[in-house]
Length: 260
Image 1: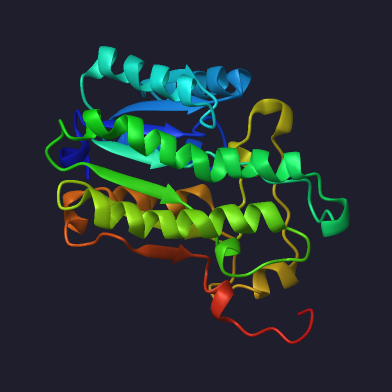
Image 2 (image 1 turned 120 degrees about the vertical axis):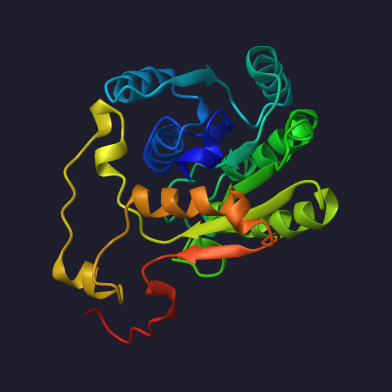
């Protein structure tokens, strides 16, 4: 991947922490010029320092991807600095307050989650188009979730937004091909503790039963997602578009009848 991504320009939304930061590090290690955008400016600055400590370069631009004008400004800055975009990773996402019963769910919170998780990828894809068309083999990667096709109780907004993003993925693939390939990764349980900003960072602890829910015997890491992202956005995946790759250690195909 080192030779393929050398000098490629990669934009990752929600790239300051968690899975996004894991992907940013992987693309940078592969030689790409990586731009991350995030609403959390503190996390963005920490991400810059973290990768700088590994002799990796990173550009941070603050942006709320649910706001059209901010997305337009983001792409204008990418245009000014790099002149093109090879890979757009729509990773930014928020979750509604966990397990809020439907009768108590504030519709404003539902709208906010869909604004970031679904409207955001559409806006970013729309305004990145002129930049992507300048690249030789451009790609868009959407980070969805296994919550798109399975749920815990009372997770309406997050599940609906990720399900919508799954559908948006194949719609974009059909609409933007053959020039631009569009795929998705659906992560399962990914442990992001070591990849959070310092004030939120924690040491992971997983019970035996947590690991046992996964046929591979462990919980996932951002590195697991990053390796797949490098593949799907490269020329090695040139015949793959409109697809979703589930990365969950086999959790969604295991039948569980009781708490193991």
